[in-house]
Image (cartoon, rainbow, N blue to C red):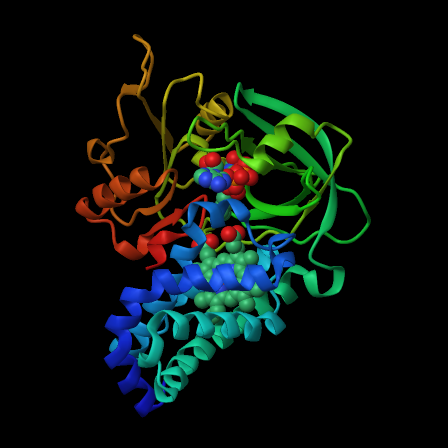
Length: 396
Ligand SMILES: Cc1cc2nc3c(=O)[nH]c(=O)nc-3n(C[C@H](O)[C@H](O)[C@H](O)COP(=O)(O)OP(=O)(O)OC[C@H]3O[C@@H](n4cnc5c(N)ncnc54)[C@H](O)[C@@H]3O)c2cc1C
Ligand code: HEM
């Protein structure tokens, strides 16, 4: 909890800090990367820096955390902390890096807000920062210990055993451990970070959901190629994975991470995805099928067309093998006579059973509309889980 005097100062300055935080985050990253360019080589994602998404996620998370501290001091925003901590352990953030971030964040706060940042204000916000940092560090240490990263290191070599073209723009890589170190398990829905060395000599990390696993311990990731257009460059890592990685190559993977994972209960479950968001759902579905689950499963997928629908046949086969499962498809370009409905996904058309637990993954507009449909249908907010393929701007 914040001290009483810090709580009062934070409450009084929250509107001003909230208004300035995006600019603070911009200055923070700019100055930190100018002084420590190596942080963009093997840790931070320069795509997320270019789009500004990481800046917005950081800013939103700090302000939300401070707001909870002063408005609902008995509460701990576990979902927010869990989301960040899982991302941190997937890239290898360590506790001795927190003072560095504090230094540049507070330097930026002073630069943007000027004399309004009195010593008392700086001290009060330092309390916020360290409460948040210590909460994150505690979760991260538990996750590192559990995954074996403490003993075996952050990165482990996995050999590409098979490369499968799923659609014209998507490939899967089946991976097997390339050394003898024990492999940490994973929960269906989780992701790994993949570290690749780019042609300019820089290392970049990206997250990929585990879209499947074999009983012999192989794991699969499925990667959509991010093609550029006149306004935006092609994706650096997905492009390289598509262009260069073949069977026999070695990829460096983190231990699995991610707070969105299929619960082991027996409640009816909705697995709703759009586009490449099918990957964590495919992992969950494969798990349910392997366990011969008798759970009621409602799978929903939305895509541009049948041709774009990644893992389409596999999804249909797994659903057909589960006794209580059904599949609903929406394609924007819909062929006549098919089983899919035309247009965008509309969950309000489905009959949803009581006690439903929902997992969603796809572009943000899909997530928003699916969540709204579910809440309107009476699904409890705590039972709607979502994965987003980038910094989570919903954290704020
Ligand atoms: C938890 C999680 C799970 C994920 N699972 C999957 C998965 O299963 N499959 C999958 O395919 N992806 C997945 N992703 C997304 C994946 O991690 C990458 O973000 C994706 O592959 C794009 O990476 P990239 O290096 O190719 O693109 P980047 O180079 O990072 O570019 C990303 C976007 O930013 C734009 N951009 C970059 N630089 C600029 C600039 N200077 N100006 C304007 N725009 C710019 C690019 O055009 C592109 O649209 C997941 C992400 C997360 C967080
Ligand atoms: C209290 C301090 C911190 C806060 C509030 C914070 C907040 C965040 C948030 C909100 C995200 C995005 C999570 C998501 O993907 O949705 C994130 C990701 C990340 N953070 Fe932190 N963080 C903190 C400390 C640190 C430290 C000390 C480092 C290491 C120098 C660090 C490095 C990273 C990296 C590398 C990512 C992934 C970035 C990307 O892939 O774009 N963070 N952090």
